[in-house]
Image 1 (cartoon, helix red, strand yellow):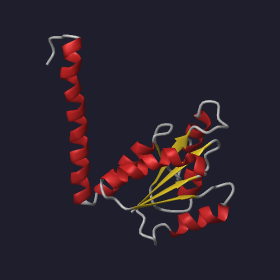
Image 2 (tube, one colour; image 1 turned 30 degrees about the vertical axis):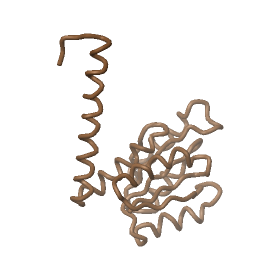
Image 3 (cartoon, rainbow, N blue to C red; image 1 turned 90 degrees about the horizontal axis):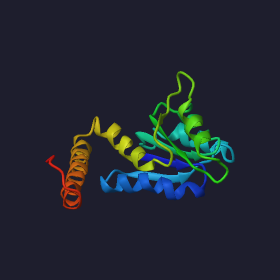
Image 4 (cartoon, one colour; image 1 turned 90 degrees about the vertical axis):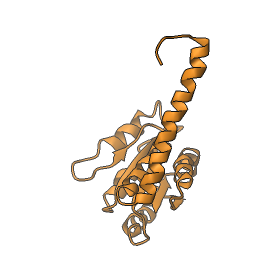
Length: 166
């Protein structure tokens, strides 16, 4: 099971992308709001009880100062994937990216691209798939579908812009 948390409801549209990917592989998840700054006790409780609730990975999305992923990682031994979110109080999102990316030695947070919740869902599935053959097989089918999708566009583009490469 995967925990998906975010700093505020305004992050929901982005974080639902991780949930949608997990749903597509039938991976159970829970999704809720846990603010590092506005609900610190809730954040501590969430992180400290995550493993006992059956979570294997936590995806934490946050904008602005983006302390949620790192603070959660400091309170659990589970892998944490941080999703920096472009928030309304940010100029370009770099504050969130760097807040999650620049963790001190000993408290790692895997970090995906700005608003990259789909990739966070994929990475969580890969972590679980490393010990779950059923999930690994579903990921292989998913990755093969990406290749098929790209190759299907080759013929379409070739009709408009001829080339000699297969």
